Image (cartoon, rainbow, N blue to C red):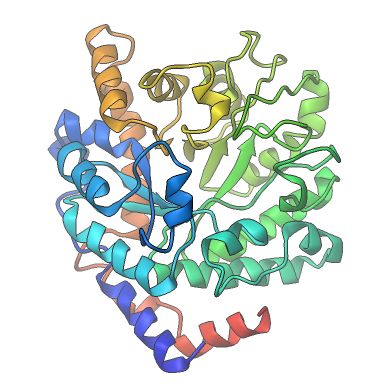
Amino acid sequence: MNRTYALILYLCYASFCSAQTSFDINTLTLEEKIGQLFMVAAVADEEIAKEFLAKKPYRLDKEYIEQLIANYHIGGIIFLGKSDYAKQIERTKHFQNLSNIPLLIGQDLEPGRIGKARLPELFSFPSNQEIGNLNDVKYTYSIGRAIGGLCRNLGVHINFAPVADVNNNPKNPVINDRSFGDNPILVTEHAIEFAQGLTDMGIIACAKHFPGHGDTDVDSHYDLPLIPHDKNRLHAMELAPFKALIAHNIPAIMVGHLEVPAFEPQKKLPSSLSKKIVTDLLRKELGFNGLIITDSLHMYGVTKYFNTGEYELYGLLAGNDILLCPFDVPAGVTAIKQALHDELITEKEIDEHVERILNIKKKVCPSRQSSCTDTSDRIPTEKLTATWNIYR
């Protein structure tokens, strides 16, 4: 990376979080509170992502996101598809300027093919499987830290990584080389180190896909995978990395779309929409106090079995704080308002979710005058470039 170019990108971060009103939940309207629950999918450039957009039955374009910010007060954006580094910075700055409450910006920048699909010109880190095979935790930490530096210069606050799934099914079509390995101890060690690398760069690490997507032969993008094991096996294998990450204060966990009868007896109810899994297991039994986020709600593991608006509402009722990639924000907002009217949920309960979201935002983007414009704690450009080049 050219040093001058890197310096320009580095300084661009100063103006990402430009918009600011109070973070006090008492100043927010009900509509603004509900809006904070949604993190919507977007692309950084419609031309670059043309093929990706053509495959999607919903909008991710600039004009649509502008409407969602203005009319529904959405809380965050996840960039999907292929991105150009500079154009993503520009698009992020634009969206932040439109929002009265700072947007939480997310992206799937896990090592390997998923991250490379997002930033193909820059992302050349080895896969998690290769990292696990090397089994050098210092190296894993360094990669987490380097990717954290990239996130900071992009204006990404939350990286949906590490993958904490134990890949113990050779027929797994979706996790596979995205996992550190088939041993829960090894996966745990490397997930913790990778998360710490992100954390030390000021990036929110989000472990996925709770309660564990490793032992499946179905991709939840296309259908609902079944995890048939009993609770003892699940605690010993699938849940082990997540329990360790919780003990190490992982700030966020993503819940996958999985059918897990041991914890949720209702057939075809995804773990992401299950109160028994999200609230009773993750929040209460495992004691996780951080941010809980659904996996993408446009995936067929959810949409095949529920209607638009239903899965956004059920995700909230299950106990998730952030509803990721909702298929239809207006329908989701309408469903949540109706649930309030029907007393299925209270405004106080919504406040609890929004408080967690706002507390995260206070850490990563407190105000125009605070860390969003102060570059004193940013990565020195020469260090970022040097660290990046080590792994290119």
